[in-house]
Amino acid sequence: MQLTKKQISNFQEMIYKHYKQSGRTFSWRETNNPYHIFVSEVMLQQTQTSRVAKKYEEFILRFPDFTSLAKTSLYKVLEVWQGLGYNRRAKFLHQSAQIITSKYANIIPKNEKILKTLPGIGAATASSILAFAFNIPTVFVETNIRVVFLHLFLNNKENVHDTEILSLVSQTLDKTSARLWYYALTDYGAMLKSKRINPIHKSKSYNKQSKFSGSDRQIRGAIIRLLIQNETQTITQTCHFLKETLNAEPLRTQKIIQTLIQEKLITKKIEPKTDNQHIKI
Image (cartoon, rainbow, N blue to C red):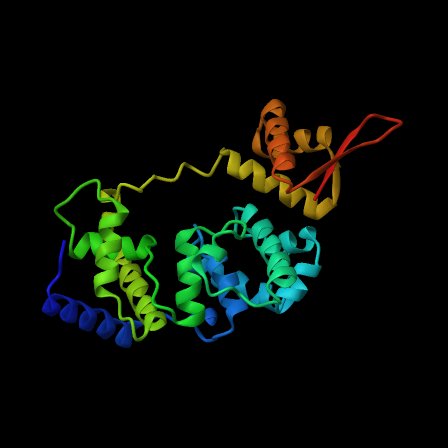
């Protein structure tokens, strides 16, 4: 879809008008510190802003820069991360900090290709970091942005591919003020969703999230929380605890533990005398 100059002008005017009247305020929007913005963008992956807002300031206070984050242990990172879910993101953030301190002298590379080589950083996150941290007019799409364009420009279509949305994002982007534009654009999408206007099912990339209760995600999170509270547990103790609290079958818990070990979120050690298998972060 090719937009006219008038369409683009009217669209930008509408988005900025709403932002001026009803724009949201978040701590990560009150800073130009690239590290702080990097942290916020990783936290915002698959997580609502309301949950991130509660955790972001605590995380920044505990780890104020890449150096402090890189030098700490994964255990301490996960300890602060609790409540955000998807714990692999915390591990990826920790690893990224170590790479940025050792390879890039504590400076985030202003290069999308390089950013995408960092653990857990995909194309959308790399572009959003460049836009928000450095005001670089990159083109990306996330949930709220999808909602805006699906509702206003593609409402009569189904199974819309992101490439079509990205074309519209590119055409309408305010290249003189990318940071402010994306703040305004995402806030407009959040407003639409608050009014129960959410055509996200029209997106080809849409996948309805599975129920959390009883899911592997719930069990994974419970294992991490248990190890943060107790530092070390035997696999038998862990399986028993999750059977009691979540009614998780021991065999299922054991498989999830093995996956966490493979992902290097936790480690396993066998006691020589007892053959007990202990796990820890």
